Structure formats: C-alpha cells, structure tokens
Length: 588
Image (cartoon, rainbow, N blue to C red):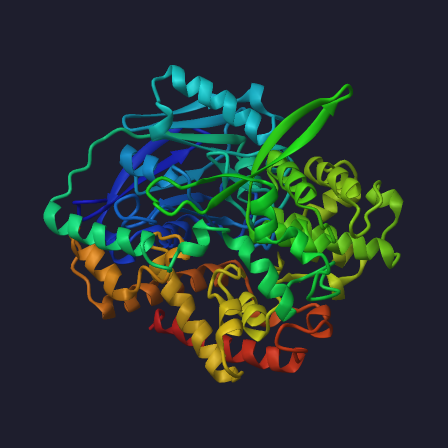
C-alpha cells in the first residue's frame, strides 16, 4: 500500500458473504504483485482438493508500483489450474489495477461458493455479493453491458471502474476458460474462468475513487517523466504501438519458427496475407492503451458480419495480437485476416483462451485425419483451413455439446490420453504451446517455467538472440530470468516494458515513493518469490521428471534446426537441479 508499511488484503468468503480486511506488514518482503499473490495463495491453498473445489482460493494482487508509474498496469491472478492441476498464474491489464488501487486494496483472496449465481461489487467503502442469475449463460460482452448498466445506477463511474467477466465456457468448467477484463484484456490461459464459474461467480466489478498523495512529489515527478520519455520517445516500445506484436509473423515465418497446422511445419505459405502489415492495412481501426500506459499497444481490428439475409450486416471490433494470429490462424491453416478476427471474436464471446483453443483444435484436426476420432465425435468437419468447421467447433467446445468436446475442454494432453495421438498433442506440461518453435530456449523454457508459459523466462527470445547454442549457458539464463521476472512481476509491469524497467530504473522508481532497496534486495526478492512458487508446485504434486514432451517437437525443424530429445531432457534435468537447490535453501 502506497505510503504505508503494510499490504492491505481483503478476504471474501462467497458462501457466508463474510468479508474481512487485514493489514499485513509481514507481506512487505514480497514487494507486491505476484510476490504477495504467491504467498497468499500458498497460505490458503488446499492441495488435497480438486482444482475446482469451492474451498480453493482465487487471489488477485496489484504491484508495488501499479498505476503510479507508466506501464505498471497489470493485475495478477493465482489459482489452482484446472488445465494442469498445479500452479495457475495469469495477468491482465485494462483498468483493473487502477480500480483496485483507488479502492484501497493491494490483494483480494476469494474462497467459497456463492449460494446462487452472483457477481461481486467492490468499491472503496463497500463490498456486496449481487444477484447474477439473469446473466448466467450470457456471453462476455452481454454480461459486461448488463453490469455496466447496473453499476452506473450505483454511481460507479465508468472511468474509475473495472469489470472482470466470464462467459459460458467458464460456467461449463472448460479447463482453459478465460476471464475478460474491460472488453479487450484477459486473464487468459490456465483456466481462471472455470475457477470463477465453479464458485458461481459470473463477474467482479471494482470501483475506486480515493485520492492518493505522493509524499516526495518533486522526486517522483522527475522519475515519472524520465520513464515516460523512455516509453514514448525511444525505440524501446515503438513496435508495440506501430503494427504491434503481429509484426513478428513475417520474420518468424522466414526463420522457420512459426508453428503451422499443428506444427506440421514452421512456415506458413500465405503468411504475408495475415502479417501485422496486412492486418493494419485491412482491419485496423484504432489503438488503445491500458489505464496508466502511454504506449497504445492494443490493436483493434474490425470486420463486417452478415447476421441476417437481405444485406443485414454489422461491424465487429475485436483486439488482435501475434499469439491470436498464431493460434487461430497459422496453427489451423487459416489465411484470411477477416476469418482470424471472426474466430477471435467467437473465442472471446464464449470466454475461452485463444491459444489453448487453437492448439487443442489443431490436435483434433490431426486426430480426425489419423482416425483416432471420427466425425461422430467432432460433429463438424475439422480440416486445416476450414473456417466454417472451426467456427462451429468453438461453440461446441464452449458449451460441451457432447462427450468429445467435454473431453477436449480439459486440454489436449487430457484428450490425447483418452483418444490417442499424444505425439502430436502440442502441449508442454499440460499447457498448449505458444507461437514460437524457435529452439531449445522456447521448448525447455516452457517445460521448466513455473506456470509453463513462454512468458516465464522468455526462452524464445534467447533462441532468437544467441550466436551459438550451449546448453549450460541456456539453462543458466533461463533460470536467472525466471526469478528476475518474478521480481518485475511484483511491480507489476507489462513485459513489453522490460527494456524500460532495468534494475536501476526499478530502484529509482520504488525508492522515490518510499521504499529503500538495493540491487541485491531485488535479486533476493525475485528468488524469494520463485522459491514460494516452487513450494506451491511441490505441494500440488508437480514432478518435473514426469513431463513428457510430444514427439512432434523433435520431428519438425525449428528455426534453429531439428531439436534433439536427449539434449532437451538433459537441459530439463540441469534446470531442475538448480530449482531444487533454491527450494532447499528455503527449507534450511
């Protein structure tokens, strides 16, 4: 909490509707964000229970610098992932960190199950569990509109309010259901939407209007302006504003690192038709920023959709980025910007994670072709490039219309364990792959990452920047970057700004608002947080040696050539040894 020596935590029991607030000075060594969330999550975790048991906690936390400095815009959610059965960790921006800051809460711990379908209304001086029975079954956007209307009557102005919603996929318990924040941002991956649905929690509305004084105003303003200029007048973040992350499509394709058609290939023939430049020329209508960010990296694309006969059209606007173009484009063989945006819209309306949806459908397409499943299972003809089939399959997946889609809704690892085709179910420790088939950094980095995400340690970037491959160097860099990101995710900064917020800048920023930290302190904080995550994983029974990487990762050349399964296994063992040493340090 700014200007205080404690972290203000609100605990909400949905079953009893009891709320308590604690001022936790003991959480200060965790800085904020993912550090505080990890500690609170470990305290409230019930490892013996199912991921969707009502007693399992959902923890939200903002960072030590949230909304105070540019690009420190994110909120972290931690939960037991129904997709992997272990650590679930997801980030979203929008207005949520601002609203929580203005409402006066550093973290929220939610347990229990509401007696009826409900949503939470949180404000500076009030918390209420409100009736959401009329919203159950609505899409994400329909729910958002309904809650905006309701909350406006309470005087909760839109500019200071943030709304987190789930769609039908979360209600149905799809293991990779997402939660949408303020229309265009998401707690994607890992299944937060299913966790909320299991608690009868359709949405969370947060409104804050308190004033927060800055005690050392002159020093703060000086640091703020320095960071602002680095964001807006240098090349560090220019690409994110210009064409955005879709600019990666062409270079990754040329390098052979763009996963295509369930990783049958690392190149996509019509990549130029779905490149960042193509989206900008054909579909881009505006750019947006999260609250507190001057960059404007959210790219909104539009397409026209016929909703009835007789030339009845409507314009649909949806956010797009590289990962969505990969998962719902190249991975499914879709080569049209309009069709990709339509698929993105379908996924987001139903509240699904785009990457897990696309990669799971990629496996299903291959499985159908190889005879592991039939049209009786898929109902629709799943074939690479068949837009209509995928559009209909997404709805089947969200609503679990038959046994096959309910099984696929538990992830490609689970589905392939039932139907077969494990060698081409492109998941890593249960999490569907990201859009980088770049080399050992991306593959091993995801395998050993705390939540098995390409964002845990940025291994894909290591593949792209290294002059030569050395497994020991890779392991050391992956390990050090993992705990460094634990530290930066306690601020919480957008990872696009990782070149802006080097250690010196972080220290200057935090110390100007009341902290007294050194570089060694930041390193210690990162390791403390990573150790806590490892404790969570151990409590949930994660076994690194049990991670089985699908054969296709080693059959399709990466941008750095064919990968050797034995080399990857050796790197994982070396990394695991370092992680065990760090974990044991905390036990001494």
